[in-house]
Amino acid sequence: GSTPDCGRRKCSPSAGTTSTPAKSEIKVSGAQDGVTNERKDTKTGKVRTIELAPSTVAAMLAARPPLWTGKLVMPDSRGGAWWQSNFLRSPFGPIRKKADLEWVTPYTMRHTMATLLLRAHVPLKVVSERLGHADVMTTLKHYAHVMPGDQQRAAAVMEGFLNPPVKP
Image (cartoon, rainbow, N blue to C red):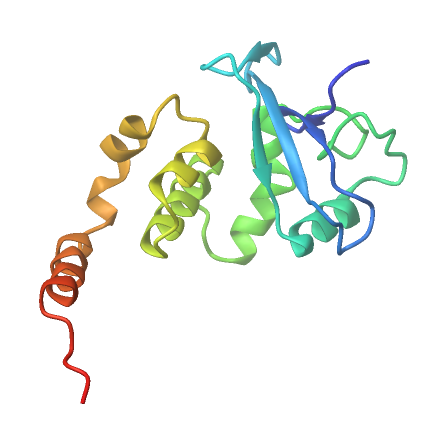
């Protein structure tokens, strides 16, 4: 059988159809060129699994068009895959305009996700896997600047190990 598609990313949903599935995830196995609409494998050639929050799955299910066939996770209004020009115009364009964020692109959202996760101390390996990077060094090279307090936190942790509080 064919692998479902998440719009521009080819994936296989294992999430249930309720807002509280036992395991909400998608498996990304490739991408779709936004200009030529040709399918291609991921850069690493590997399938990656991205776990989603139940509320994200519920929003994705609610956004599907009425004639959804089950082949695509996030199809366009006709049930097909998004072209870059269509995606930026609709649905993404009106959402950006309403939020007064017309400068935001899907790449900006990807970068923001990685930045927020790293600043929330999600392990670098997990963020790297979600981004589909071949190794954590790629992620570190691009996102080290968003972790400015790590040296201070490391020093504080070592201080706690080397000088534990004295118990009365």
